[in-house]
Image (cartoon, rainbow, N blue to C red; front, top):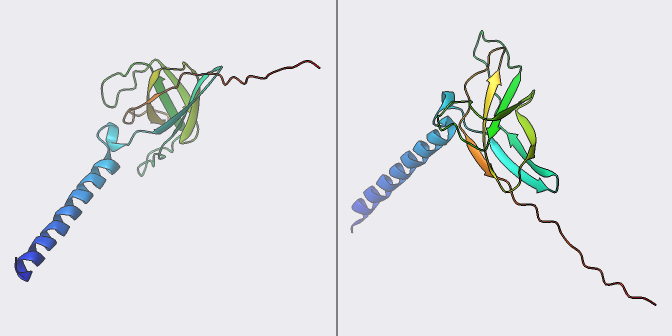
Length: 148
């Protein structure tokens, strides 16, 4: 292959790679539903008293002329509503910040979460995320007792 063809192929590959990267980045930033919002990030911890889920998401910026955000509804449950933008979950909790903690979850279960902003009127839900809570297994320490 001569230098001209090699250079053309290299330029094509760089352009194609940049186009693909920008396309993936656009999909990640825009999400796939509920007004283009991404779903929250969620992590879970299991203890003897149950599981806890901690969520964090990007705050909603109101459009010009809209009221400011009063807080957020964290919607959650063991069943997904199966419809993008739906807030039809078993439970919800209200928080004032773009993060929150849900307690009292069952261990060894899958939960589905979505978040909606509230500015006096509740908006549609974000993209759904799910998380599995671990089974709690107590740590047992064996101690050998010997008499004197």
